[in-house]
Image 1 (tube, rainbow, N blue to C red):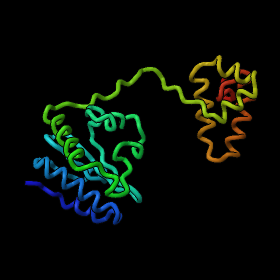
Image 2 (image 1 turned 135 degrees about the horizontal axis):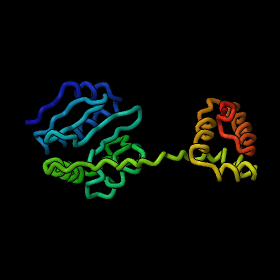
Image 3 (image 1 turned 180 degrees about the vertical axis):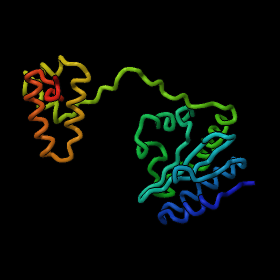
Image 4 (image 1 turned 90 degrees about the horizontal axis):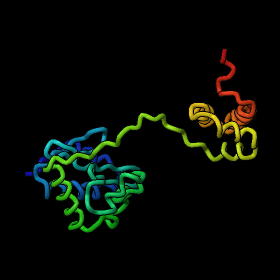
Length: 204
């Protein structure tokens, strides 16, 4: 018999009016086809756990709802598999606004059963292997244009180490206003042209 958590009741009741029937529908389908499902509020949103592991999550926002299968990348439907590489609102079931946006119940039920099977088999999502190499920050377009317009600075910048470039990129992108960013870029181009690092003033 389905076990409903009162905190999830409250979550749905406090959601926007358009979201309530969507969330209720998802919830009912999950419980109808996975009676052993355990639901709870974690990190402020409803989670559905099965066999001691996360299985799916639903959430509501100001103008849309979302439903996520935790192991979507391991599931067979390509719309789910590609979710890992997309922003949340770009994912399948990531931006549902009306009941008409939902897939047929039969299709959704098949997803539930496949997700259940993964949990029953104890299959886990393999976390990405972290590289020991330092992360190279992406050069913002607005600074790349400035460098292109200053061949000497660009030549020096391209020839320097990742850490040299990183110090300047962080300084420029952290600027709170356009005026501050512009000032920092102008100073950076001058210093880079002279082969100076971001913290050259503090070098002994």
